[in-house]
Length: 573
Image (cartoon, rainbow, N blue to C red):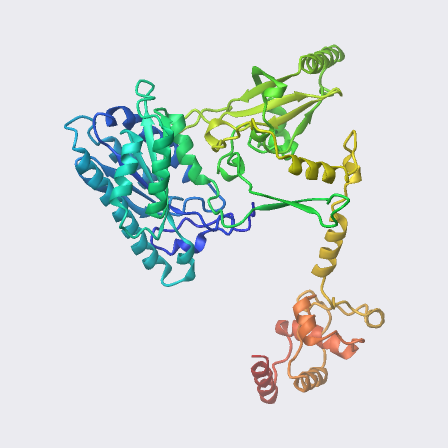
């Protein structure tokens, strides 16, 4: 991901925030969440949905980096349709969004069940009103810019009613509406374990929904999720993933088979598996980075470090090595070795060495990893319990362990990686096998065989950053006047005669500018004024010293000299 536009000001809801949309997520849609707060389902789904919203918004509002959710609006349908939150920018608006969630919690969960026809009409009005509000917002903020042409909106309806019935109501009510700005309409049905299966899909029902969706002219999806905070968080976290889909993200080039000269191109899309902890503005006890040893050392410097205890990582589980997915590990690994601290006596150091060796041997022989947890040294003053970092410890054939951070639930993004039960196409298998046979094979990977052209790149950058004509005093002039200082304020030499000053002013008038200090080594000035003269005149160097020290006792200039000075200053301006 490109981090050129990582830090963005939050701005206000109507401050032209479309200009802050990152090029890394160029087509992120605005979001509308419509919640059906109808009894009797609302009494069970309300705490789950509100807790999930509270957790998700706490994360989304705090994320640095590219803009993932540009705009958000929230509607509630209970006794009437109500817009609890007009379109606002998510980043930096946590207080306002949380107050909206608390208002959603106060909606009554008991009462009379409204008729299905009336409920469907309120839902239709909420969708159309959100689209109208979105058009007005874009028209107001974009002010005719072409950025509005690439902006769309996605509407998510959360309900406790049978999902297929809600989809039919929306399809019937929106069939003749203007849905040009609507990119997707998602119906999320929250079910409990007791009523699962009562509204199951059949092939006929799936076929009819697909036909109706094509007639509607937009994509309508139905998603059933369990009534739990985690599953609702997963639905909401899908908003944080890149939603462009305008073109493929990656071209994987393989050497062509012997009978084909051109390489074989496999086009791929990329998907984030987790939110990088580097985008979270916090500093946990152990840190979320593993780039250097400093990430694990105390923050204090100097002798204060000597009194700081070492960080403590507590083993909480053993993991099967083949059960750990590499996609949930992030950051740079650190190698752990038995300590050689000179403050330990020999017996303690030998005992520690034996324990470390035994740990490496046991983990490797049993094909196990260790799951570690570190707790904050101090409890948060705000009443929270701080941040808990987790790490995975992997053994190696050498006497060492590999430490890598592992993602937690809060930063994990939805990713459905199902195992394929079908065999690939035979012709595709033959093509890929022929491509791979063109590559050399190594039994042991040696990074010394890789070169990234980094040295050449750094040298070229260093040469380009140097000035084209650097200023320096020529050796001949330096030898002729080694006793004469160049800087006026530091000079202790005697004042020069008035005749030398007048001669210097005449030289300055001929050149249209009077030099008072030596030029700085600037590439811009060198390119515009050309290279410095080959030789420096002793009288000119004397003039520099005398004119700089003139303010500390030089004779006052005559009227003609003052007029010449004014003419010089006008030329310089």
